[in-house]
Length: 287
Image (cartoon, rainbow, N blue to C red; front, side, top):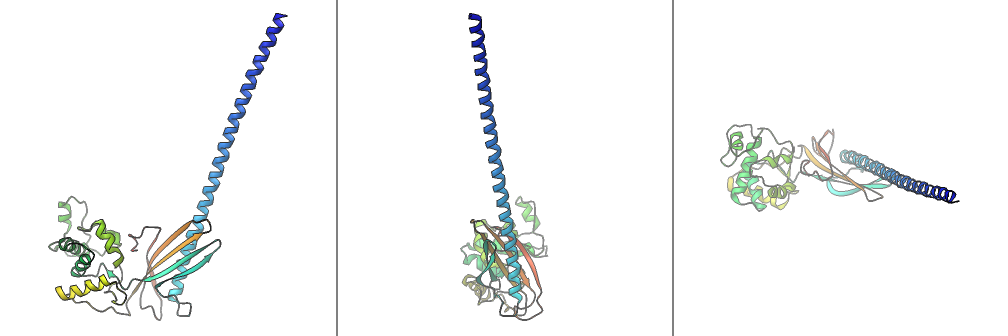
């Protein structure tokens, strides 16, 4: 009798251990299933987000090319580079695109040091800092080996511990200004809205900011710098900004800088995309 009871108790204990193992296994499988399901849902969400981003990017790119078409159109569909926002509809979203004329800005590769110095001073730089930055910019793109008094060529850069020097060629992006002697981050941020590239002539006063007009006048008055009037038949540089927004609140920004060879009136229309970027990479793309 006692042996039967002992055997019965042993079987009950074994059954209890088996039940615990089964319950533990079920709990582990449930946890694993939950993790797999969660990862699957996260993957689906990530894939959907990437798909939405790709749609917005394609929409913004298409809007830039649509803006170019309207810019060079001689019909009533013409869009002027006046900053007006033009909505372009997308499936499930919209792109707001605007065009801006760069004719009121200073071409950094064309502006005389006296003009740049006056601009920097007008933006709050002291006389020495303004002179250093202005002459260093001129030395940066000048092919001459002779440095201006406050500027610098390769030997001066090396003496200051820099492993690079002026290339003696026009700047390719405004971001290059960060490498120039005397160009501090604060000055760069202040001056960026007033500079452009590829314009190859002086700014149009009617489109220029007051600080730019004042710099031109000061350079002419104080330094006797001749300021030629811009040629309306010359190239035009236009900045295009397209912001695509989806239904879920996602957004993508495309920025482009375009040069049109010839005036904005008439034909033939020939243009080149000078810079192409996205998001907040404004400095390198002249925005």
